[in-house]
Length: 454
Image 1 (cartoon, rainbow, N blue to C red):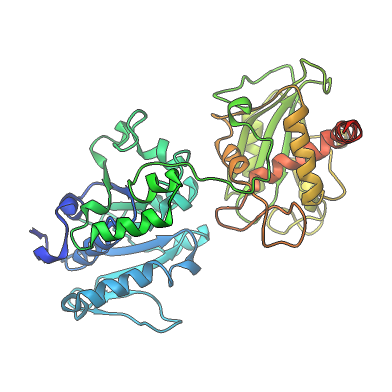
Image 2 (image 1 turned 90 degrees about the horizontal axis):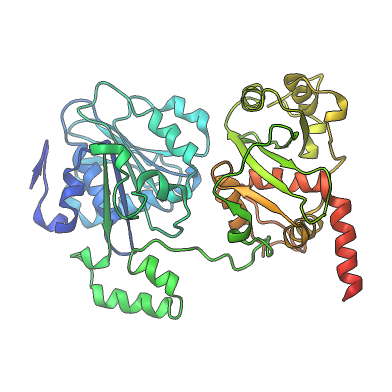
């Protein structure tokens, strides 16, 4: 089997992956179980591409740059160790501080590492022709669309974005974005012929002892049908949160397909400030608290690696005639050079940009510690008559609510697990601050009644 500039020897590939190796689709998405050979065949495909004449510039990516050396870079090195006849055409450093770049000595074409954790670095990507995102399910949609936007050079014979992952969580944004609404293993029709979806399991790998590997995994995942479905059968699954921070979160009760925007009600904005991303949750609520017909509706999320001015403009455009109230992270009282000038705080800038009065700024003097915030949020979810989150308007917030978990490595009780990866939880923080501002006293009174009753 041959492709422009390269002949695939039969001992290099499994038959199941022939269409992957030959694919020139604009988007190529590979999902499946462990041991299926996804990673090995993607590496083979990229290595083959470097032998083409003309302009070829390949990037291999993960969500965080610091993880590449011990994961994807290691996979490349293992590939070359198994295929010394191909290794002789490439130069690369195996040192601990090496560049992790692979260069084809015949053509000069390179395979270059890149992390999606810093959007500013995309400016350094030059004339990319192919981008592979390993474990694309660990990335946010914005990170993937960001890297896709730089894949546009006119010098290339064809452009391709490749994503690979094990389908751990069916509620991941990838499911709706790339896959058919009814068939979760087929391409979303909105891409037409630009997208190819490839599903594989260990039985498709011609170069491992499938039965031995399967027995090993069955022993590892004995009794855990979800893990068996994902890792052995390559099926979409549901990642279990074994230490939920929101133990009172009931998806079926709280999540609604859509929520109406109530023109006669104010909009309550709750911000969280990070260098990236900036986030805000917009909510509406009834003026009477705790009565049978009272409600809290979380209607829309705002998120992006953008300036404060741009987010406020989005908010004003979305709610041009609404009365707005603002709260959020108490750190905004001090200001951050990312969002505010030397002589103002972040909140004074928001007040000015949105044209609000002091009465519309409801800022806490400090954030609740995680343990108290956890009690507050769970009491509200369990005891308040009607709390709803719009699936259409707040998909990432819903995901945050589901994955938020107690940090088992912290010495503090009820501490929320946070990182700048999967557990960023920036929208979730804004959501928590909303309840601190407007319902802390209410929740305390409810909680004391429950404790005294018991």
